[in-house]
Image 1 (cartoon, rainbow, N blue to C red):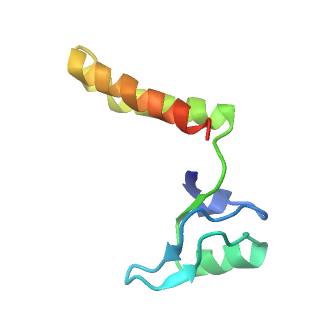
Image 2: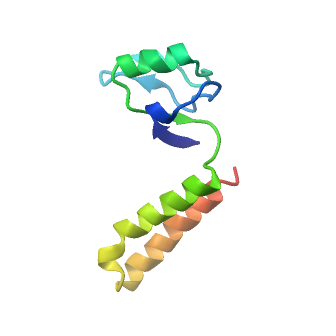
Image 3: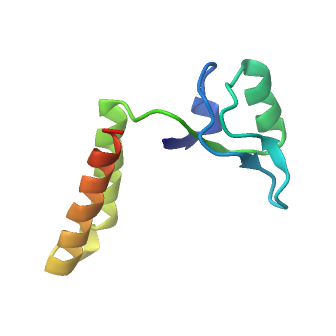
Amino acid sequence: MQRLPLKRAEEGMVLFKDVKTPDGRVLCSRYTKLTKDIINGLLRAGVTSVCVEGSLSPKELKEQLAAMEQRFVKVKDDPVMIALMKVIALGFVEGQKG
């Protein structure tokens, strides 16, 4: 599963989670295969991101890990925070294995 900006969604991707309005109405249900029309409809409805099945590409994984490291830069001297960062990074990597 990966969350991505709706603008990066492509035809053929399959939703991992329902897409809902802020008040809880389902716009698109889990397992829906995205089409251009569905993507455009969600964009018009104000949806900004979706969760889709599948994993990140190696480049996307590297970008996610770099962004996570950047979030921890202010606590780089705290051993507890560094251990936490490593656990999170391991979760990213293990999550790609399915």
